[in-house]
Amino acid sequence: MKQKFNILLASVFLVSMSFLGCKKSFTDADYTSELATHSDDQTRFNNETDAVSNDLNTVVDNYTAFNGKSTSTLALPCDATVVVDSTSNPRKITITYNGMNCLGTRTRTGVVTLTLPGTTRWKDVGAVLTVTYQNLKITRVSDNKSITINGVKTITNVTGGLVRFLANVGPITHTITSTGMVVTFDDGSQRKWQIAKKRVFSYNNGIVITTTGTGTVDGVNNVSEWGVNRFGNTFITSINQPMIVRQDCNFRLTSGQVTHNKLAATILVTYGLDANGVATTCPAGSYYFKLVFTSAAGIQRTVILPY
Image: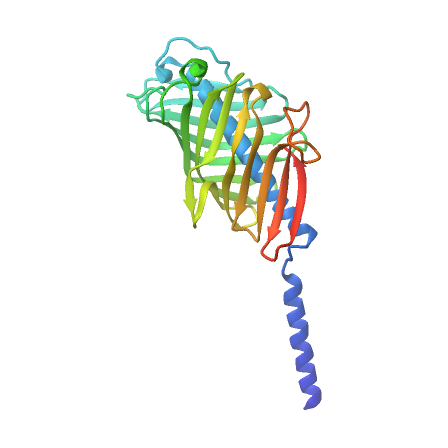
């Protein structure tokens, strides 16, 4: 009987150790890698979807049926063709991306469509564009990694006005919302997320875009995105310091800070840094962001990555 009891204890011990061995610790290197990947994903989604939003401003500004003006002053995207249907209701613009961007940093293929009610001009106060992403595949030239975006979002011209007149008319405010965007990665995994943010366009040696979060989710304020990441984990991203994009830095993200909440560790991400993690002006090469991970137990790690 004693021998059988000892065997039973040994079995329970082995099962317990096996179960514990399967649980990831914050100190595991691959766990840190997972958090860094989540942060890199978030940075890419923001940069790429905001780049498309900038393209939409340019495209809408070029067509009288949408902007209410007869002159065009902004260049169309160099990696896309544009087809305008101004007779339908709602009116429709189809942007087909087909190659390398102007800076040679990424390729884009796929379709983005935008619609506007037939009685509305984009310069009108409260005008709403509906934007649909259809298999928009974006490949980063530096490492050949790609993401494919699908989903629908709306952009509201809260103040009215056109970006082309910023130097004379003052700030213009847009809000961007979505109840469901999906990104598919190279390995087939997916991220699903929602959007609630505000973009304010001002002029200082060129266009300056300031982005803040407008949502409140599970008690977290200033939320810009939330959903499920590629690892199947729920996340909430809030903007602590406004995200600043500047035209005089080739429309790059030059500063800002966000927090990724609801993960196993809280992630604080600061943008606009050099390779040493120090704030810098527009560099000839890459900007860097610094990730500081803090677990519930107070364990902290810091990682610096380019973007």
